[in-house]
Structure formats: C-alpha cells, structure tokens
Amino acid sequence: MDERYSRQVLFPGIGKEGQAKICNKHVLIIGAGALGSGNAEILTRAGVGKITVVDRDYVEASNLQRQQLYTEADVAERLPKAAAAERRLREINSDVEVRSIIGDATPEILEELIQDVDVMMDATDNFETRMAMNDVSQKYNVPWIYGACVGSYGMSFSIIPGRTPCLNCLLRTIPLQGMTCDTGGIISPVVQMVIAHQTSETLKMLVEDWDAVRTSFVSFDLWRNQYTSLKMSKAKYAGCLSCGEERTYPYLDHENRTKTTVLCGRDTVQIRPSISGEISLEKLAGQLSTLGYSVKGNPYLISVELGEERMVIFQDGRALIHGTKDLTHAKAVYQRIMG
Ligand SMILES: [Zn+2]
Image (cartoon, rainbow, N blue to C red; front, side, top):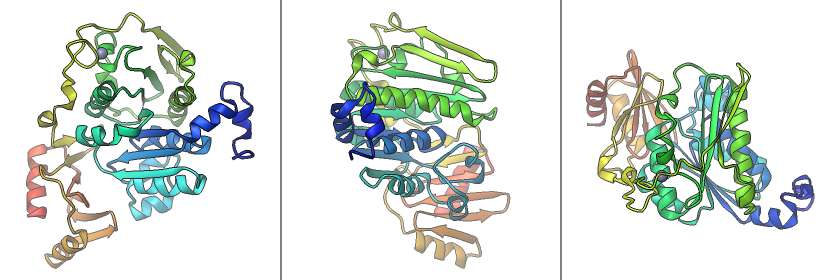
C-alpha cells in the first residue's frame, strides 16, 4: 500500500490516516455508463476498500467515445457493462473488493445494497432512479453525490442527510428533470469534469473531512465557457416528503414504480417482469433457435433478431427491445418471445 498510494498520502487533505479510512470504506455506484466508468476507475485507483457497481445495460459501440472502462472486445461480446467494468476494475487494482450487479437499481435493490455503504454515487441516466436514491439516502442516512451531463453542460451536488437540502428540495428551485434525458449528444470532457467533482467530494467524505465538502450546486458549460456555483443553504424545504419532518419517502413506494420504460434518448423499451427470478438463457436460446430465430449470446444475456427490432434478454427475465418506443408493441413482442 505504501508505494501505491504514496502521492495521495503526501497530499495533506488525505495523509496516512485518510488513506487508511479510504481503504476501509464502501462506495456504491449506481450506473456504469460514462459517469459510472470514470467514477469507478478513479475510486478503484484511489484504493477504496469495496466498490459496488449496478448497471442494467450492455456495452455498445456508441459508448466507447466516453465510457472509459470499455473496449472494442466488450462491444463484440455484448458484455453487460457491470460485468465488463468489474473485470477491468480488478485488473486496475486487485486490492479493491469489486462487486457488480447486472440489473435495474430498483427501490428494493437500493434498500438492500445501501446497508453497509459509506457514500453512494449517482451515475444514472434517469430521474426515477435518482429520486429513489435520494429517498434511500435520507432513510438510511448515507450521503450521495448527484451528477449529470448533457451536450457540453454538466452539474453536480453533494447531498448529506441532515446537513444539506436533498434532491427533492432542490427541484423546487432548479428544474432538473428536463435536463437529464440525453438526446442531444455529449462530449467526453464534460463527463470528466462531472467525474472530477463527484470523486473529489467522495474522497472528502471517505476521509470524513465534512467541512471540505462543497455545499453549492455547481454547473458548467465547457463549450460556452460558463461556470456557476449556486448557494443552496436556503433550499432546504421543511415540508419535503423525502427529508422533511413529515417524510414519507414517496419514491420508495414499490407499488408505484414503472415496469415498462422507454430508455432515455434511445429507441429502446425496457420490460421488467413483475415476478423476477433467474431464467435459463441457454434453454430459451435453444427454443428460439428451433423456432427459426437468429440468437446470439454470452453467459449474461441473449440477443434475438426480430427483423427491424432486436430483443436482448438478461438472466433475471428483464428485456431490452431495441428499435421501438411503443410500450404496447414492446409488451406484445415480450409476450411473444417469452411465452
Ligand atoms: Zn428534501
């Protein structure tokens, strides 16, 4: 450990004591796309004791421009991002205990995973998950770091239960929902800038230097050369349902969550079965091949060609239907293939 982390230990904000803390902490990263890859790599190199990564997608060619953990080989294999990330992170630092989960970060999963976590990081692409993370953070008293980017614009905010406003409070002053769905493209440096903010905040929290944690909402546009830091001390809302006195954690309502979703900025619908459980991909692939479908796969998923559309089925029965945004149609396709 001495040599490996020497430069970080020399930094006064961390030191030997801070490094020992970092080596004993657990960070949960929700999403393994652009922000998730970068956050996970930096924290793995920094020697965080345990890192858990959750992601529901697999690696595609359009990811390589900015999702720094992945390679052309991962694209060729259609590896789930969580599995590809775990493999790469272990190569980078074998001292770190890396756990990857292929699936949706549902409220249930989040409540299960949060138990021994020190800091949670936002690397998702959708608002539903962020709001669930926000409620879980408040309920279990775990800080989390919001991060988002689109085009050349990025933003970040650190949320510490009991000290800062929560994301639900912030929505009263900043219209964040509209900015999270990435349809307008993105440049990689803005991803790196958000990662720099998120991981700096995480390191401060891991070494328990709470006074160093930034309390403002930071946003920047790297193309237009704008940098804004908004004070948020007055944004805490007493009536907030996520962090106020009469809190109900509305986004953890398991009944309320959607099972069929159009994925952000893509011609893809995700379908999650109401009863989840492992399915035999090998058996399903065999049956579909017998019926004349073209099926390819790896140990984690199978991909079925359906003319203009393509369906990818994961072990937990979840499916992505590419080539459509029509929920009813996608459900019909799901029923036809899954029986
Ligand atoms: Zn709140």
